[in-house]
Length: 130
Image (cartoon, rainbow, N blue to C red; front, side, top):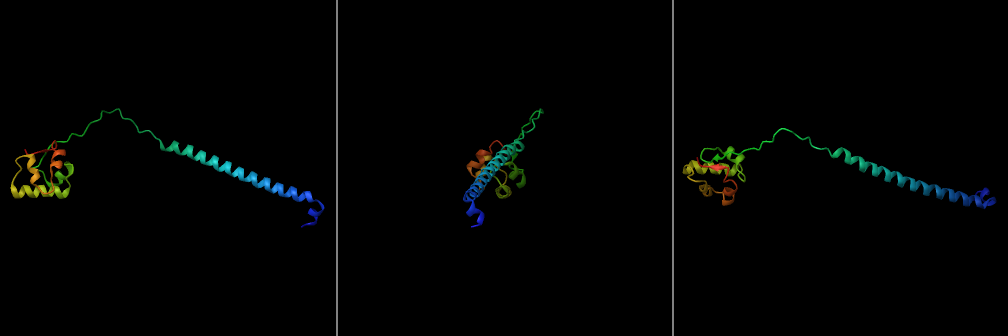
């Protein structure tokens, strides 16, 4: 132990207390600074994200689907316009039509492999045979 601490034992106590108080203050200060920074970052992060979409005064038009003639449409048109019909099923419709002639009714689509009642039901407003 240094000679000054033997002569002044209270100096050691003061040194220990100052060091402890200093570390305690530093710890609390750092917690405060980090809390403050986190709070500010949280508050400021929300300001840049919530941007209102511009409103338009122009009248909105709805896309009107016209009925697709399954006797004349090509595979690409069928795939693009019929729900649940991809390129493979659309090509199957075209191949069936080439092999068996035109469809007499929309219900005749059931004869095509891969086309079921559900596909015909969801597309009944979008298909025609004329």
